[in-house]
Length: 288
Ligand code: GUN
Image 1 (cartoon, protein in one colour):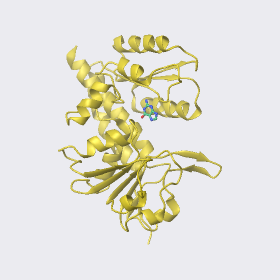
Image 2 (cartoon, rainbow, N blue to C red; image 1 turned 90 degrees about the horizontal axis):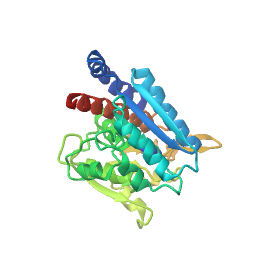
Image 3 (cartoon, rainbow, N blue to C red; image 1 turned 90 degrees about the vertical axis):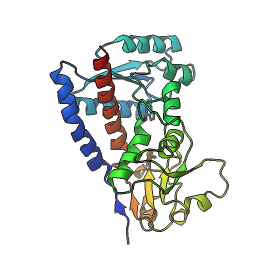
């Protein structure tokens, strides 16, 4: 028996539909929410991600700005652009696409974004607020994973969630969100990583398994508890098309529910970024 597919596109469309009246409310007050993306260099995946985000803004009636800097842009140049966006009243959300070239400190780049416009939730202050359970923003991909779970009938409360990967973009903040004392959280969380011994011993105990390893099709059928929910955050371009961190065809025979790649977590990340931008616009326009 095959797993039920969790349709990320449909759930993302529902999140987006709920945003429309909030956007209309802002526009009625003369505020068009604005999202700015800064990209350094021409990494094809990053260029595509930023394009998808700006397309989503256009579809939703948001103002969108994309600043593209050359791959050899100095750090000072990037920081100056971010300062300009911090001061721009038409921009309510700012993201600096990662990865950044080696001459730029990721730490200084994420720290340069105004905490009130940090819709990626990468500024150390905002990361800290997530960790202590008082988020200003929820980081888009981890929040998208939680929204997918809750809206597909898999509230993580009381469940054992095993996360594969400890990146600052997915694994770490997802663990922090899931262990909160809050709706859609209250999970028991295990974080595994490249140094974990006997990975399958941990994954087989997961009620919900989230794969964010950066390694194509690492998760195989023997690593899954029958009936478990499997969420695949990975995206890898191969000769056979896009694949995730999960060997989908075999894992779907064991799992109870599974997200596809593409069409799973990806659309949710974009929807949650739009949500954060609208929330930022609401808060910033109240302050003025
Ligand atoms: N690179 C990979 N994922 C992300 C993301 O969610 N935000 C940014 N800024 N860069 C990324």
